[in-house]
Image (cartoon, rainbow, N blue to C red):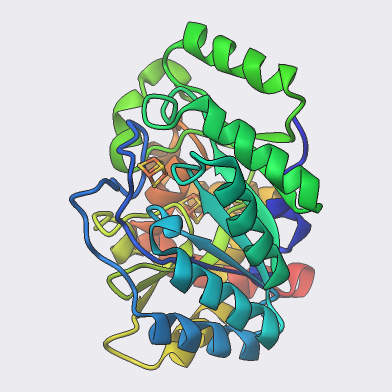
Length: 323
Ligand code: SF4
Ligand code: SF4
């Protein structure tokens, strides 16, 4: 497995637009609970306004995702062109449903590359394989390779090691660049978690997915692992507001000054913050195990006492960390 191209950019440089929740698949682990029954979609003009504002806040890259953005290919092409002309690198995520014809696949990818696409991420694993034939994945990877477009498979392990092994063997045999993404305790993936997978808080690492993320319903979060149904996240400092209720600029501004985000993105700071909370008398609340860093993050962020204490922690650590 390679280092993913997502890490070619620092978290504060990334903007993610979940353009739609509609999707041709309905994967069992989908955080956005996407499927063909969902119709939420951002307006193209709003998406352009988001990108214009993001540039004022030094964003360097936009990730266009969903749902499945290739359902709106012409708009995707226009957004790619617009973003690239404005100075943003463009990354696109897809499940590959559209690649059933070799010439058409090549034509679509060539047009996107010509208009500024930098990396194409294709999701494929035991969750996606019931919906997408492997031949589509082959077509996309071959076409991308032939035009010099960076491409990468995003693979997530399922609860079926046998199926995972078969798919991994196919992907490895084809020598595709591949990154293993973690299953997250959100959306439909919540049901795959069980107590045996839990770890101590100091074995969780830190958050590498902080990305200013805009949803089709206008909600904005500092976290890309979200769905519109994640009411818990809406009560945390990761929620920046809704673009239909206030200026987009205010949301980027709010994110810049958010000290909780600076804690959750540093392994050292998380450990120190948890110890700090224990020193404040919150032993019982924190002496447990967690599925992933997201699980700990939710525990900390959804507790208003803890987020208030993050401010106090910030004051004490200001000199050392500059947070
Ligand atoms: S994981 Fe991706 S491909 Fe699967 S349903 Fe969700 S958005 Fe669609
Ligand atoms: S650790 Fe927190 S901010 Fe980071 S991806 Fe998970 S839930 Fe989002």
